[in-house]
Length: 315
Image 1 (cartoon, rainbow, N blue to C red):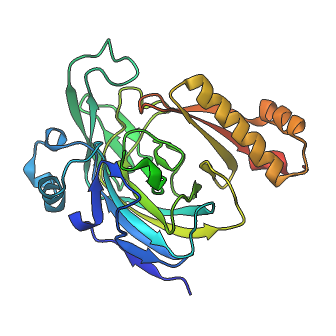
Image 2 (cartoon, rainbow, N blue to C red; image 1 turned 90 degrees about the vertical axis):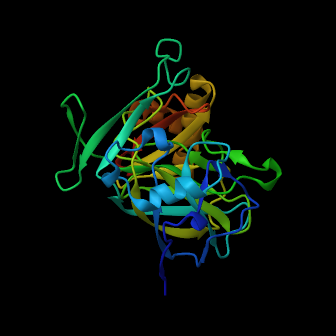
Image 3 (cartoon, helix red, strand yellow; image 1 turned 60 degrees about the horizontal axis):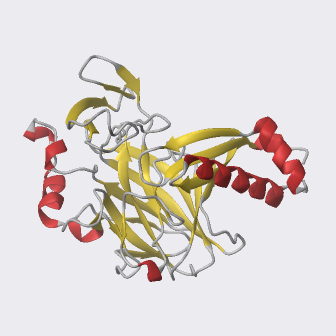
């Protein structure tokens, strides 16, 4: 029978800014088990809420304890999934997300973001999160509906790559900053090492497609996922599905090439799930597929295509 596990939010279970296949697991689970984990917001002390009473002790302890890695993100993991071998896919069912903080922050960082030469002064603002109402309130009065997700979901990178910074999403997933990866979505990640080495972190309260200023509403989240080894899927690239749509994912420093990756990926998904030829799948993508810009700020930019599963019904 599947078991449930929880990873306590202590520094021993987290890493700051670096994926590394050599890092020992913080938890070992069986395929099909569920895991609850906790994520601190990205950033450092400069982004903490100005009211000390609203900053939890475990976040301060993590900031004081964890050595800075190659990127800015707190990540929980890795989780070793028994039976996962290179060439498999790890199925990640996102079951639940809850807020750990009643605030989040948004920052502009000099020389980063989509318009790096136009916004060259650092600024951070804090938004109040009302989880009960499902809204956040920005300092100038705007209220937005909350839509939480983990910006980082990934497996350990190939061992030959060595330590890899958390900022740039790659074939193992990582900092994809895809707002569609929320409750009810299933993500499929390539396995490059025995056990997979699953990581999650970088809690976001809400984000627009693009994440143009470099940050979403950065906050703390608690999430529950189910981790299942899929030996019947052989893919070297992440993809996902929501209850209603298939989702292909493109990641490349060129937005054009990320778009092409997403289109190729959806053609492959359609052909895998139907009897359509590659030409027919390409036509279907043109008629029913929707390309969206995931983010434009993480080194490798992101484009994802959403295609309604209903479009496959007679295929």
